[in-house]
Length: 178
Image (cartoon, rainbow, N blue to C red; front, side, top):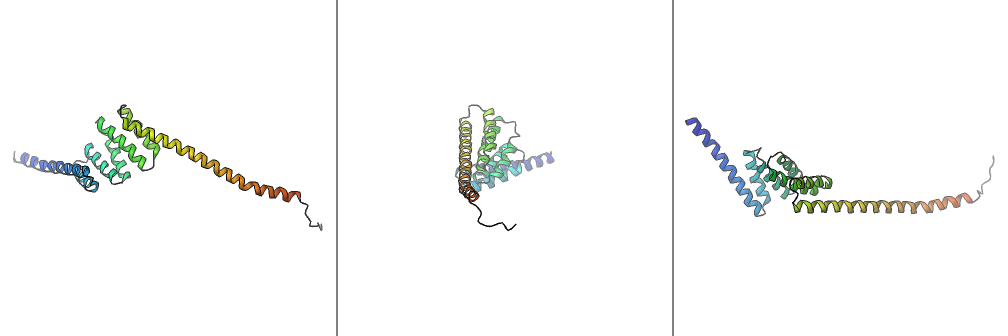
């Protein structure tokens, strides 16, 4: 009985500490102090490393502090949860984080996955459309740039070709001593 009581006491403070850190993290996050929030979320997550909500909070903290690589790593771990709503949020935020890392194609895949989990999600749909449109514009711009470079190269070669043609039509004034 004493051993059971001691074991229970050992668990309760850890749970209370984790809950306190999570609460303080949320308060700091809502106040815009993302560094402080991240610190509390990480500490809370250390006590429950496999809890998807803790991983999600840490991922959000990393995202808000601009560490998109760490955010992506943590959001991906959240995808292992059975909680469909949390998985949906993680997919959406993965799309945002991948976009911020410059990987538009990965962002598209995550927005599509978020929409597969919640087809009525307007934010995922809007972000998906935005990234698709942006990629289309980039491709058009790249094609235009490629065309302009080719055109410039052709124009640079034209005068040289004219010189070569003019040089071929002029007789060589040197006598062949052969």
